[in-house]
Length: 179
Image (cartoon, rainbow, N blue to C red; front, side, top):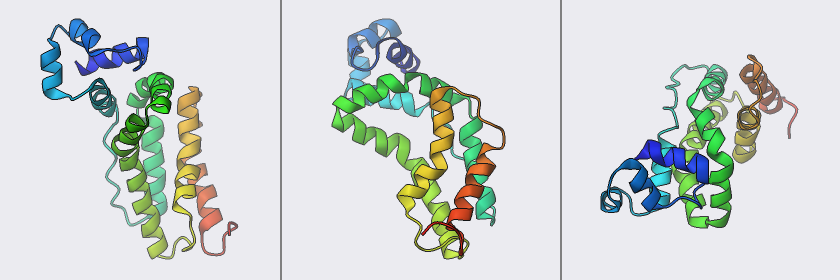
């Protein structure tokens, strides 16, 4: 059912999708779908969440290396390509459905944000980064270049994760350029 939901999202978008269509294409009853998911949106979120890869375990004591590894993971993981292909339709639906947008942020985006926040806080605690780092801005600075390339379907330069982290580090290291 999840694979069918993804296929139908790609074809019709969430707005054009129905539980009837998922049931018919999957060969199951609507009752079976509603037994597992309370709504079309819940089923779609479940399907999309399966496209997200597991975040890498980052246990090195070197925060900069961990940030680079995290961004490399996001840049190289092939599963998000499917996700990026359906994103315009998903975001279109989310723009008209605040409850879906909130659920999307909590289920899909928050784990990645939380992991990056932990790394940045660790660097601040170790005095590798200044204490005045704006976490929200930091997340945008670190994720933005990678996600831009993914969404625009452009080839990411192989050294982009290193360059992004280096620029961020220069800006926020003690004595760095940002204030």
